[in-house]
Amino acid sequence: MKKMLLASAIAMTMPFTANAAANFVEGDATWAGEAELGATLTTGNTDTSSVKARLNINHELGDWENQYLFEGLYKEDQEEVTAKRYFAGFQGDYKLNESSYIFAGASYEVDPFTGYDYKLAAAAGYGHKFVLSEKSTLKAEIGPGYLYQRLDDEQQAELGYKTEDSMVVHGVLNYEAAIGESAKFKQEFIADYGDNLIARSETSLTANIVGALAMKFAVVVRYNDEPLDNKESTDTETNMTLLYSF
Image (cartoon, rainbow, N blue to C red; front, side, top):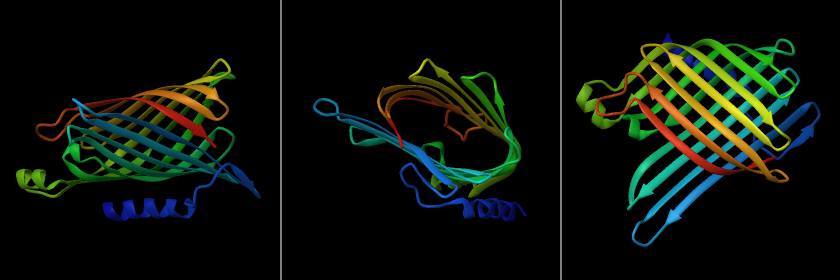
């Protein structure tokens, strides 16, 4: 039954997917997005490298507003991989009125440093947008969801099973505020509560450099209140990246 729910939720989002493109209007359909990239490289006495990339695409079509998000993080220190994370997510929002909507979405994440080969998540529910002022908004979402996680070989051998899955309550809070004419503050919080609590917070400040190019500083915190053995409950990530809006 749980797997049928996951398949249904993913199937609901499939009609919303399409090829990404630069900002354009085609009939009633509007595409726009942001591409983000940050990288470091040191050689000599210390050999390190890291790459953080993100592509966020928004698509509006009538009463539908859809989001496609792709993220990647890779870090290497002295030829040893110290971080590797890949994420793909899709969500479709159907507007009920100017402030309310219903949503359905699914995501896939690979992060071997957590002890899992991959994680699949799906959720659907109700969302509301609060206009706090001319320069700030708050979006809230809540609904039922499903979480499926596959353990890596080491954890399978230690625990004696391959997968973990549970029904969850999925909640989202997104706050956004303009600072002056060229800067923007965002606070994003996502939580899934089922057998345990899994949450993600991203606090960011974006400042325009010239035209569509901006500099972004972000602090990402990931939390799991019941991590696998020898794993930490909290992971933090601090990034300085270039962001291009199109």
